[in-house]
Figure 1 (spheres, rainbow, N blue to C red):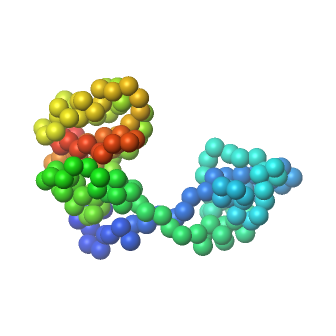
Figure 2: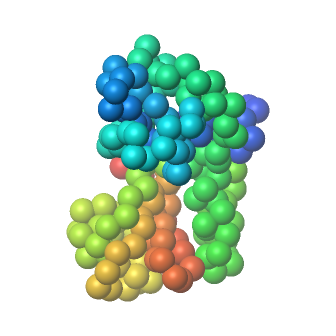
Length: 179
């Protein structure tokens, strides 16, 4: 979302619709259903359907009318900025964290948010050669065996790089923006 500094932008106005997996009833393959985790929103149970590796599209003409209605009525969920903001709150206090939190509250664009092996993320996505603040901690956090999350947030002339380990506080660095 590229809403930075847009008047009226807030976490509340940027909430996104709930998402559901797609499923097809084996007897009516032309109708797409919304999978709610334990059953389809229209009541079909798991042994009556086949799951698909895409999301239910409530706008598709083949969408089950009951599932569409239930999906439309489902509570919205936080936008990416709000979800990342909530994760960054656990990072060590300091000016970099506060700048990132403020940028997320104003809708700064999340350019990337992925999970993967730390070494691969460091090699391909962490912008280590452009880091101007927080580099040593970032390199250490990405020099571990195992998986981590990595997010980049563009704000003005900077990109914040955020490493999101599973069981430790996030680490934040600042890099020059790719312009």
